[in-house]
Length: 180
Image (cartoon, rainbow, N blue to C red; front, side, top):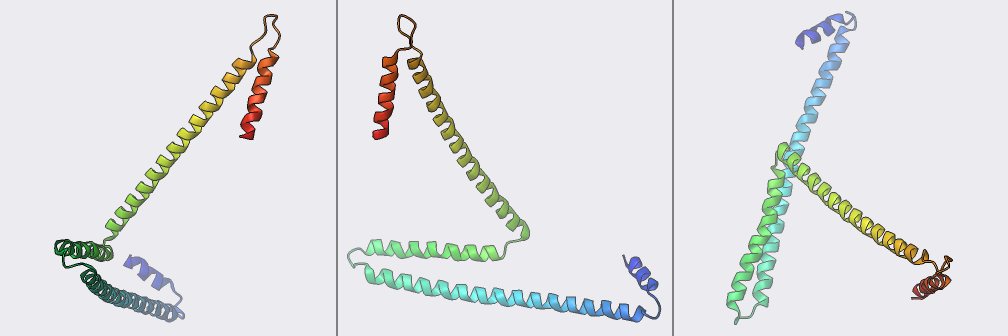
């Protein structure tokens, strides 16, 4: 790779070579400065986020204890002793999860993303299968109804003519169904 850089440097015209080298040096320094700024920005952001999370966690923990202590009766001391312990443990878990999310590796992030996508696909597939089953059931009912009406309408009298009384009964049923 360095051999190719040397070749490129040697291919520059002699009277412009110093300009190309200066431009490359300037670009390298700018890139290093950007990297340092990004690194510093990340470090500052992490520190401020952690400080804010600790403050909110402590404030909410204090308010929960204060509220639970003022609302409980002295007669139900055993119940009040269990409630703050449950709220403390349930409140600490999201805080721990936030810290774990911040310190996840890219592999873990991609794994979580894959799991989320997999669950979403499974949910969509279940929804699709449920809709498909409903459509099939509705189609089956429709066909059964059509077959029943066809069987009713195909009946003939003894002389081989269509039974108009059955036709009239069917039309009457349709009209009554529409009114309901």
